[in-house]
View 1 (cartoon, rainbow, N blue to C red):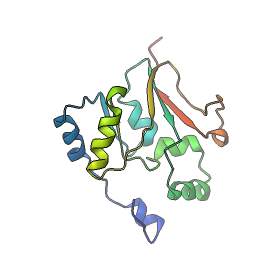
View 2 (view 1 turned 120 degrees about the vertical axis):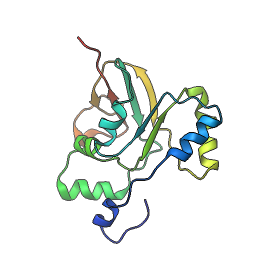
View 3 (view 1 turned 60 degrees about the horizontal axis):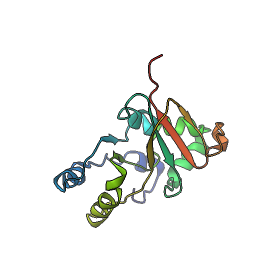
Length: 155
C-alpha cells in the first residue's frame, strides 16, 4: 500500500489483481494447491475457503508486519484482533498455498518479478478453529505470533 493523505483514501484504494504473478508461477511449473484473494471477509473468511476440511493454516507473524493503518483503525474503532482478521486483509492481498518443497523457488520467482513475498505459515492436519499465539492464548489482546484458520470435519 502506498502512502495516502487520509485513512479514507487508503481504504478506497482499488483491489490489486494478482493473475499475472500466479500465471507466471504456473507457467514455471510450480504447483499451487490453493489461492485466496484477501478481500472482504478478511484473512479468516478468504483463506479458510481454500483449506480442505480437517486441515488448518497456522500463520506466523515473524515476517509479517501488519501495516499501521490497521492498528490505527483497530484503536479508533475499538475493534478486537479477532474481528480485524475477520474483516480486513491486514496487509496481505493474496495467499498461495503450495508444497513446502517449492517455497524457495516460488519466493525467488515472485521477488524477481517485483512482488513482496511473506512466508505466512503452513498447513497442518487439525480440527482447530481459533486465533491464538504460540502459547495457546486465545484472548484478542494476547494474540502475538500466530493465527490458526481451519475447517472442522463434520461430526
